[in-house]
Length: 184
Image (spheres, rainbow, N blue to C red):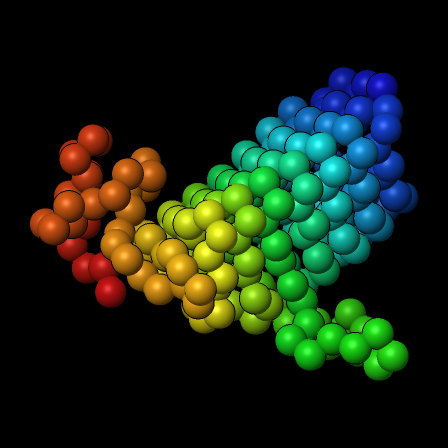
């Protein structure tokens, strides 16, 4: 096991040169963090996570098992990525005609958003802060803040509180009591 005073990397994982890992971060079994990646403080990368070249991950991000965060994807602070969720970075991939990293479509997942198990976020879109993507959903367009998205393709089926609970018709959280006024 690689033990550093400020972060932990399991001995089965591989960290390339030129990687920044924040204090308190834990990188578990069979992970690969590629060159130029920046991972914030107090993150958790589950088993078999791949972080591609030049990916930026904020603080307090949790990435569950079997997730690949490809180049062109940015995860802001407090993002949750469920098991086996999928990111892409090329809308028209061809093995025989690679486009190169400068042509990847950018995807950003904003502060506090959650992506469920086996959900897919097609590249070139933004997932708004505190949005929640249901398990198995396929995101094919931008997602507004606090939107609850489900289905294939994903459609808004409600709104969620910052704490993650579904808002009632008055846009008030039945658990923490937070009210929201101007959601799309």
